Image 1 (spheres, rainbow, N blue to C red):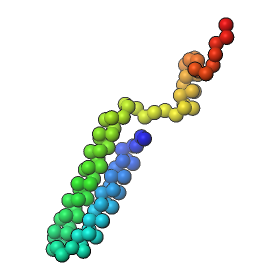
Image 2 (cartoon, helix red, strand yellow; image 1 turned 180 degrees about the vertical axis):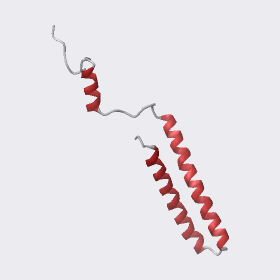
Image 3 (cartoon, helix red, strand yellow; image 1 turned 90 degrees about the horizontal axis):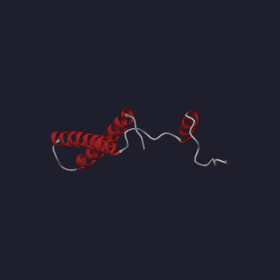
Image 4 (tube, rainbow, N blue to C red; image 1 turned 60 degrees about the horizontal axis):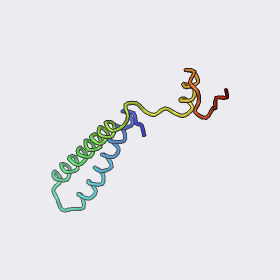
Length: 92
């Protein structure tokens, strides 16, 4: 799966915001002070964002250097270069 930088950033922000919202709801139920609730929510949101970004860096490092091309583009490039398709037989 190939993600652009922008889509990965939007996904990480969305995940961090959702984690922050869930944390806020849980902490508002608990008998804590408002400063503790806001501080914990902010820290969990920040940690979620950086964890997602770090995971994207690891995945990008483990993937090949360029995204895979489609089969149609591959066939067009092969025929344009004069290479034979592996399913075509040479009759001599």
